[in-house]
Length: 322
Image (cartoon, rainbow, N blue to C red; front, side, top):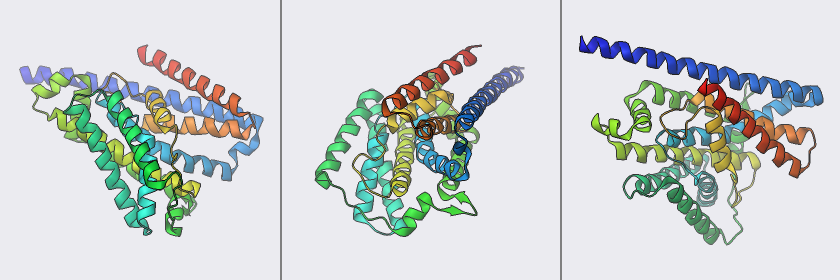
């Protein structure tokens, strides 16, 4: 009797969550279609194959970052160091090595190590996520400038550039990499004990602890994933731009938080989906592209970007509360 009652009570909750996620995805997709349609009416060049390919390539780095940011937000955290991780990994790995597979291997290892430090500070030293990742951001910035003397000069092999800007059968390699990563992370969140424990911790750390989940390790692993995703994003972004810079990824910390929230991740923890945050990232990148296509001024670009982010977040909040 008890087991039957428990199972019956769980199923409606899962169905409700899935229904809400589908509704949010449809809402985001509708918003994307509207802004694409309006922009195409103003400038048909927006839907040209070359511009669409550019949008998808640019969406890949933000997509990687927002997946990691979402994982951290699910466990009631925040990662302000993602942009600094992107730049630091790009500077160090490309300056030390000139073989593409090793550049990625070293870069991802660095990202994991930095993420582990963030997770240790939050989980074991009880530093608030804001302060812990802000401190990491500043420390990494200092290390980066001290190492480069303000003028980074890493080498970029041709194969490295191909991964960031090339295509296979007309599909950008960066998009393929993001798609594979997204499927893997979606499976991790929705189909594994680890993913369920992450969401349980976000809903109630006390309940997660009572079930025997290693709560501190969950937090550390969330930040490790965020660090790895930021490192991957930094490598793809520097490959796309073609030069190594101390400010690679600047602004991605705020853009990733905005995309995560717009995509359905709850800052209170316990909620988030990979498809939702990726669609939100595509919306943001589209907005960035739109203001360029329409030839708007820098000042107006910032105003429009901020306003549309606020409107999208407001629509999401209203929909999620209804």
